[in-house]
Image 1 (cartoon, one colour):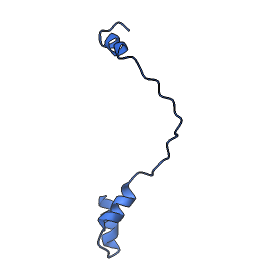
Image 2 (tube, one colour):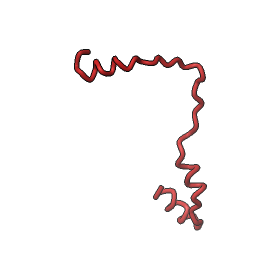
Image 3 (tube, helix red, strand yellow):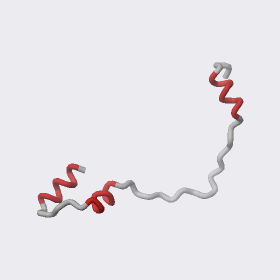
Image 4 (cartoon, rainbow, N blue to C red):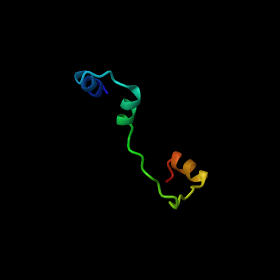
Amino acid sequence: MALLIADSLRQGELPEARRLKERLEPPQRALPDDTPVALTDLASFDTLLEGRA
């Protein structure tokens, strides 16, 4: 962010928060709608915590 602000100032411009935010936000990615998610039984976590796995 500091580099972006310094670059704006070198160009004789005041940094704009909106433009900084746009440049710093990660690109939006589309997530697939059909990704299967297997739910795990909660008892299996107890087994892991007790060290029996």
